[in-house]
Image (cartoon, rainbow, N blue to C red; front, side, top):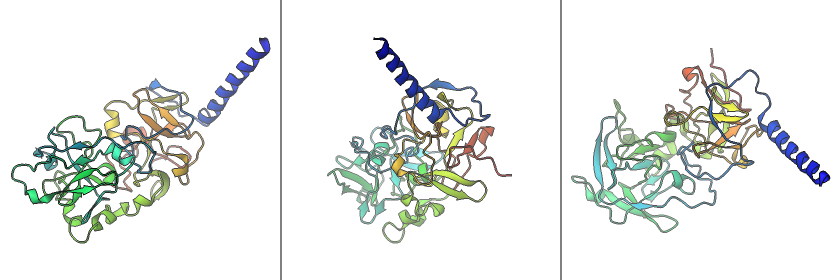
Length: 342
């Protein structure tokens, strides 16, 4: 009995030591402050369930083998007048409809499948009726690989955003620099003070706009789930599969793993969802584990530090989150905070 107990204690100690080695080293003088909640890290990245993080709704599309979110019919469409975006199409429940730059309108083709379709559920065409005053001929459908008939407007496939919870929400606007609320004519809803961002890429050949994908974003679809970009001011920094800058929060903690960004904070700083180790390039895999947050969201870490993107970054290459509040910083390939360039 004594021998069994000693062996059991030894195994427990070994497990704690292994976890400490993964998440307890090289913290330096970065003492966390104001942290709330704690959860033990999982042994390996989990499935991209909620689809709210970097993928943030950025949707990896890598395919985790899970089911896409249940597609729901659009019903009677309506047009909502947004102060920020102008006229926006909604479904029968008042939820905003979105379009994806990487899709193609002619012929209609969807580039959002797998994990992407969890964050961006497709809108089915069954029973869809055009809003009053909108040309019904603009409405159509495409048949997805699973047989679902997806609603299109002027050829562009329509989606909802899983994080929009009530009528009037437009949390998907500008996500990844590729997702935009849909205007009644199928173009992108205009940002406040700006013109119709969809005008240029909705003209010309099929898929041309999707390929351009907002300047620096061109080719972003070829990036790994997490990779490294050479920024002219910050040096080597981590970016997600859409080329969006990845950040760390100084008030978080790596060991014990804690987050100080909850609730409304996550609206500005969406979590980076779990990314498989095999879907990384140039990233240190030390402490590369999933953080099971107290709010139920699964978050990717590097060196056990939770990772985020910034809603204020509108296109690949943006680093608008760098130095915000003196607590948010871009991440190096080893998980360190990158100092603000002088």
